Image (cartoon, rainbow, N blue to C red; front, side, top):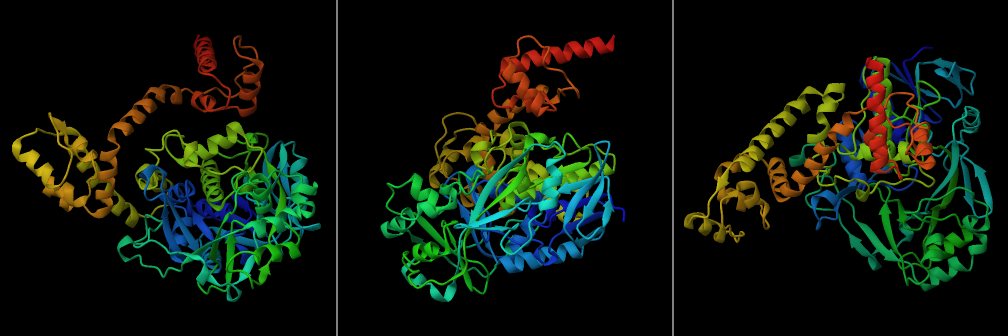
Length: 624
């Protein structure tokens, strides 16, 4: 059977890739090991968080599904870092894992142009380094000019619980062994990583009354720009906080010799920023306790996820250490924690479109690219699906810049720098944090979603009304001034606003001090016409206007560099002035622009200028 795009995998990356491709009018097939596990959350029952919330909002602004699904199936919503500036805040939601999976599966199965096959992909059809299709364990062959592999942890997946090992993609599911071995034969650099999860506890056996309660926010912050904020009032369940103690630490420490990650049983590199409990005790032995978040997995609260206790220790140790924690003395484990090793594609093997450099038409996205997290996976899946569909349609690819989106930072980091450990998104990775906020993701990216056909007219009409109002308000504030008359100074004093001593832009008046809607409309009554969403943007843009202007100026200065493309096949090794290290990095990364080259660790401004000069020389020679 013939398709345009085939997506291997039905996790967070596979879902966004399949939906984007199909919604763009391209005939798409999803091949997944278990159809009922489409959208399954392998680890924690949560979406978003610091920096990860940015990715979810950006996926949503481009027309992806994750934000909508989270709003519909969420059971607690919070804004992290709420007391800090808007650039580093992050929305996080606990989800009903069962409801999330069912919602996503039903969306996939009801999407036009998208077929689903419950099979195991075991090989690819390739001719002259050009992808032609996929073979499966049932003997079927499906043809397509684009294939996206979103295999998550399934490529040669190996689960560890103590000294017990099991070949699996996640607990209870087949691993993808044949495809993993096939990938190694393609000459693509393959590495080995490790991640893990914690035990799940029978909720009836937990005493939450002795724990700190952690409720959701009121009002709850939705993820999707398409969710009606005014009528968003989901039922929210509390989470709880408890702590490990010296007894817990002694139990774990006395069993280090039985820990797969210390015994040499596990070879893959684990996530630095989400370590197992045994790794935390080993590295931070001086700490008297470690925080544990007890989180409901579903609205029914039948099981709790004990966030902060990821482990691969033997089952008897797991039970003993869990029961040493306050509130869990009588805990019953429903599912034991485990570590999983898996193969991943070194992302320097990819172009910025997430297409492999060696095999035309073959893309990879998600955890298989060395990332960790549902959000990073969804972002990559969406971009791979978009770019595969655009390629089928003979259109230019969509490559988001580092100053345009966290997704741009994520992909640029991966394909130019690669990774030797599971990559996680942080706000510190983005140079232009004040521009790339959660709250303005729609302003930054919805025009792409519209152009791709991933956002409908009804949403775009509302968006254009919002954007027009915001543009109008900001234009007034930035172009108009006020003078320190007695009358105006009295108004400022009446609302406890900072006094001005000279002619000042309205933007700077509003940007100083702690302005809210009431204070602003006291000074500018006409602004009362703007709704809360627009007003929030007005206040943020005013507060950070000077810093935003500086970042925009930096971007303008780099625009000339952004526009300069490095020709395909550009030869670096005969350029004098470039060190062997820089030549090797440029040849490995094959950056498409000088800006991309500038993001490669070790590539200096002087080296960029040398490359720039040689590009111009080559262009002059070709024009003769």
